[in-house]
Length: 167
Image 1 (cartoon, rainbow, N blue to C red):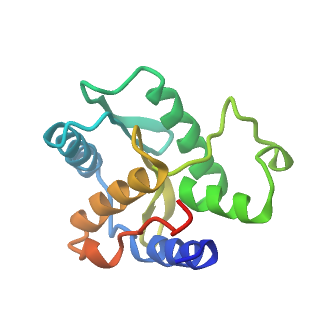
Image 2: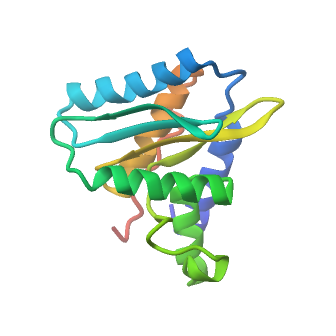
């Protein structure tokens, strides 16, 4: 899959991963699912669920370093600003050869890379972001997609992205 195909694949996934509703309890469950996966697989992850202007869940696995919380904040800001996953924005910017600055964003507050995903609720809109950091970009992205797919009872196998041949 080349970068253009990957961009289209991510756009399609984002359209399919829409929650019917989201309560604070469900937001907590999304965060707990990711935290449990990090602990079970000994992953160095920081996890955040941000909805309606506030953090509803945040956790760091034992192997997560302190800077991951900053990466999560920056990726979350990018998701909320662009209305799409941080990995999609990263790939599009790379394909176009552009940076954050032409969009009025700086690297101190916005971060390119996988792991930030919009929380889109049906008949509402994007109400927040589900964001992790600690793995390579594509793996961060895939883990968040897997979490959402699991909660929507969707088959993750058909949603998982594979690394481009150039990596």
